[in-house]
Image 1 (cartoon, rainbow, N blue to C red):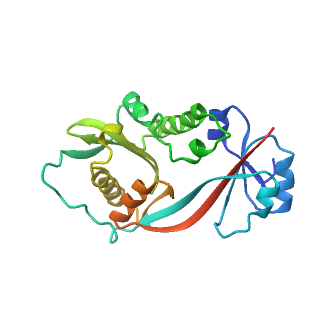
Image 2 (cartoon, rainbow, N blue to C red; image 1 turned 135 degrees about the vertical axis):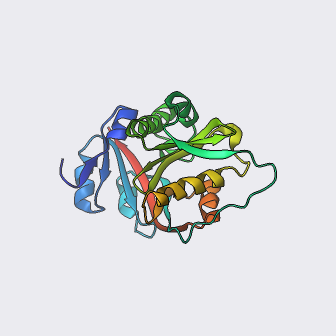
Image 3 (spheres, rainbow, N blue to C red; image 1 turned 90 degrees about the vertical axis):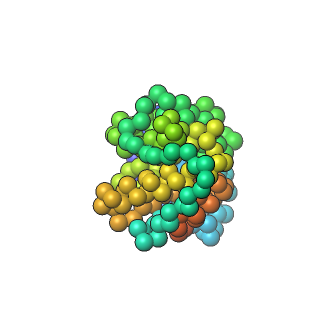
Length: 226
């Protein structure tokens, strides 16, 4: 395959069909993609003219926002009475971590894509977490000693994270995220980054509360070529 179409192994494994990402938004790349079966993804600036995508049968799935913070930006969350004991630690139990992950990503572009099966979307994130666990790049999030979520990272980037359903909506995540970012800074990273769905307002507000700034929005479109 030429440089205009890049294979996406995570997606191939989850959905059972070849998966590709278009590396360019050009008539040539779209013509090549037209002749290539499989699930196809393209990421574009939100202000780009999407007329060609509509002509070639792509549909909108999500808008991703980049978010980043340097040490001087990071804001510690305020303590409050009754807050449980919260800490992070590497190498959480894989079975429990995967149980928290499974089905937790309803805001993800694969869950929002009406053309893809929910089971495949869940498997995509489960497989990704398995790779992060095998690489030893996952922090477990603990409440009163019990594993209650995870944050997977790659270098300085927080790439996959979720909180157990029973711990959501209680103002706990900002404490865990602050600890994870602080740990990466302590390890020598000059900046911590992540990428989030613009539809996931809870996580967007979480990063904003910790002092992260937002940039580099991307609209994401999919199609399946039989």
